[in-house]
Length: 298
Ligand code: NAD
Image (tube, rainbow, N blue to C red):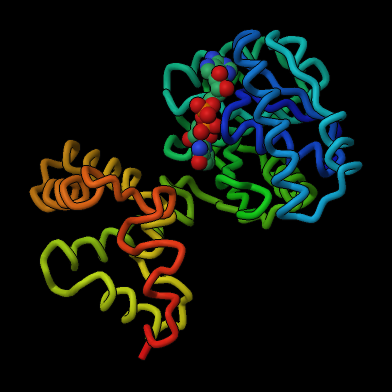
């Protein structure tokens, strides 16, 4: 892997974090976004990340300023990608927007450039043709707050070249990530393939009135030694996200159980402003949730 220049397409929530993280580790970064207004918002996001790196990673002002100094911005795709070794796409999670973007990028980027999608829910094979270079395309999926939650799931599609796969794994390590190779396409990658069914199982136990929030969490924590139970995790994920997933499954499958789960989350939590940690209350009340109390596991 001898990447030097990385282009991040889309300077939104994740794009700005990917750009900062990459520049922080010494790469030259360009951020591409659609127009001057979007570029201004991306610049603002980058500035707001600076104190987070200083506080959470103990980075010095010199280090964060140097990182920002390695980032340039452009609303012209050809200019943004002019010497890119890698383009990381973090445009909105809308299939038509991504397809249209890859059609343009395939034309604008030099032949050497590898493309990676950060999509959370769409498989890379869906866009492989649109890139015009399926062998140089794969998924590179980060988590929100990348500097702390430093997983990088690197997922091939059937046409990805093995050398490209290895190079992107090396790159992920070079920007401080724990690189997690995924050899076959899998919706939800590894993390959500484990987490989503786990969190759903907990919600089913609750909605069926098999047991209560604290007992379900306590069971998991005592039996496995895990620091958090499923409802404590749901408070971090956000109850609105859990509701959206349940509602989408209810719509797609017509399942009464998913419908009941979604309604329960809406009536008991969302409508009461209990969205999880972000609002200070969800299944637990913060900053002193019951599961952190000394006698919780007794
Ligand atoms: P966002 O809405 O915050 O940012 C999207 C950015 O793309 C905006 O800056 C927007 O101006 C720009 N954009 C819109 N149309 C564009 C186009 N045609 N070309 C280039 N840029 C365009 O979205 P986000 O939360 O950063 O998500 C981006 C991608 O990252 C999605 O695929 C999402 O699934 C993935 N992701 C998000 C998270 C998360 O927690 N937010 C976590 C992991 C992965």
